[in-house]
Length: 218
Image: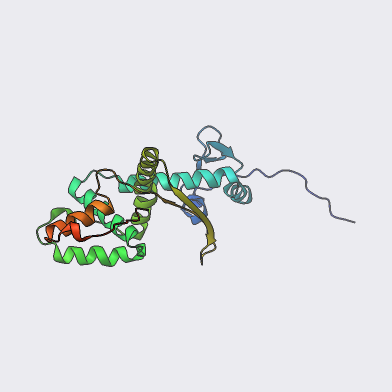
């Protein structure tokens, strides 16, 4: 005779040891309002306490987005520690230097270590802590936003500019869209013509001997 199939549902209970496993860290806990159930405090949702169901919830788009936001907030909290203003200024200037010279942020560790060794009397540099992860965050989330706002304000003051757009894919398969904006900023700065005339005058060279003058300002 065929065996009878037992269709009785076996209740599942939440296991606290799951919280120590890597896949559940940072979002899973026992539900306080529903006995035996699990709770995701990132999504504020009570869940069936089965491991397969919890793994499925972990891979949903809403949970992935909430987890990413939580990691960014945690990273910001670790950086936003009240410290001496000279130290913060030193860290920002180092990141700006790296970005302007188009140097890899992986060079930050070696650069900061070198600065620690030569800065005997500068408290700001001696207490500076800046690694590639922190440097990337400061550049993308702090300095770049300020640079964008300043660029927009500068463009409003001038009538002409050129814009070059390009897209590319780096070796890590990340797609990048670049916008290059070029404009002539003459705000309180001498023109090429004025700078050349001033240089010749300081050198004692007579300007009357110049038969013709033409300067390309752009």
